[in-house]
Image 1: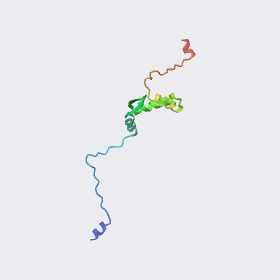
Image 2: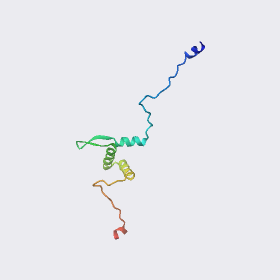
Image 3: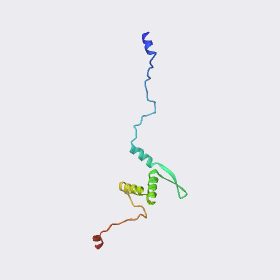
Image 4: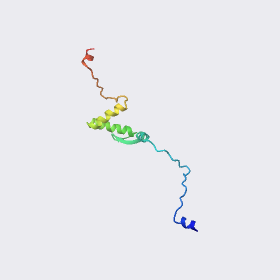
Length: 106
């Protein structure tokens, strides 16, 4: 009788079980989240046409437009991005050569 009187005030815990088919995935890193979101395709409207591009391309285009509109912060960011992710020059981009007087004499 003493056992029953003690158990009445307490609830028994049910053993926790994993549901079948539900695997516990390890948490993804910030870098993998970024890569997944950057590669995601989105639709934007450009010149009255619907264009599909990755989020990364849309972001870079926006920064490029801001830099062309003389936004100093966007210009600095674009310069950093170009240093971190070098690639081919865009068509029509101005190429500047720095020549010294010694080079000009050759």
